[in-house]
Amino acid sequence: MHEGTPMRFLLFILLTVPFIGFSQSETKEPVIYSDSTTNYAEFVGMGSTNGYTPFWIQSNQFGIVPKTGPNLSARVGLEHYWTLSENKTRNELRVGAGVEAVGNFVQTQNFLLPQAHVTLRYKNWELFVGRKKQWVGLADSTIGSGSYAWSGNALPIPKISLGTTRFVAVPLTKGWLSFQAFYSDGLFENSRPITSELKFHQKAFYLRIGKPHSLLKLYGGFNHQVQWGGKTKIPLAGENGQMPNGLSNYFHAVIGAIGGSGDDITHFDSTSRIGNHLGSIDVAAEIETYENSLLFYKQFVYEDGSLFYMKGIVDGLYGARLKRKNSYGANFEIMEAVLEFLYTKDQGGDDFVLGDGKRRGRDNYFNNQQVRDGWGYFDRTIGTPFIPPTSQTKWRWPNYADNFTSNNRVMMLHLGLKGTLFRKIEWQGKFSFSENSGAWLEKFEGDPRQFSGMIMMQSKLDVLGGLTVKGAYAADIGDLYRKTYGFMLGVRKDISFY
Image (cartoon, rainbow, N blue to C red):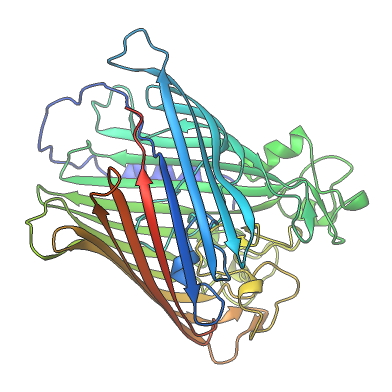
């Protein structure tokens, strides 16, 4: 990431985009602060034709679904917020805690905590410590393919985070300008293949032009992730494999400045940036009517500075989502549709010369020559699952060096659908087709193509006070992954404490 790029982008939006919006209602929203919680117990079973879990059953599930099977899974989630305000109606100050536990059995045996947090909230702000599920980026988070940099594909990284829970109005703008943001720091796992004691920095800032009920709303902003500090087994580090650490280097990591300070600084550090930086700069436009909401978005990829030189600008996630607000009770309805296109093949081109903006290519997404085990957490891609770890493809395709992924040059088309059947059954489908070209320095022969699809249904039954029964059928057909057909069956009981 080039220093100052995200802020220059935001300044561009503020100066060049007019305050467009046609208010449908001038009624002020009541200032009542509430917290949504999820409390449940669930049992899930899954299997497949070859012992591997299909892509769309195990992807973007926060790392809780094993990649191999068959498996049984028991899951429970508990979360609650208590008010600390004297005015119980407005509920401004709250404290909360949540835990979600998952036990997998049979083929894979493990115990996971995808959520375990303590949270303090004041109005629309929160400070939390621990693991919490988050979606980052301007994109659909339900039936889409997942945001480029942070998709919900891996276990949440434990961190301390301060930020907003929703878009908050900027003072003196009468609600026409609002923002959503957070700032956080955390730690990676110590069981990584090459690095240990690796630290994590993350922040995001997004602006919205238009009131919540405006016909047209414009969005823009960025997210920024850094892997830094810690130790590595490769030569590109200081004594005993120590990567740049300490407060001064932390500030270098936060702002993305070139160079650093201290005895741990190597030639690699002084000519690059402290840590592995990556993220996306996002823009979106939403048109909202009484019946529908239509959202268009683009996530521009940045990693090695190519975007600053307008290289690799075609790369990124393109999307359109249509959401219907009203159901008319038909036996078959499509309530939401998402069409996305992911392209990461450019990467600034197949040429890199440091200091030459015209030859600033080979961005090598999700890989880094110092943090060699790359943008992953417990062998799961943290970003889009369509850039998979080498462990997922090495059964057939060559390993690129000892980097995290061997396949980061991808073209993918995704269709997501969601609706109802016979008024009582909720269904959704995910259908993705990709063309995979490996990496610039180790190309795949023939650009293997891959289709992954899934149909999932669920319905509520009047049994034991209300149970939700769900099932899914999925398939992987193509040349990237093993040919797989699989299923998932589950039963869930939602719990209410009120």
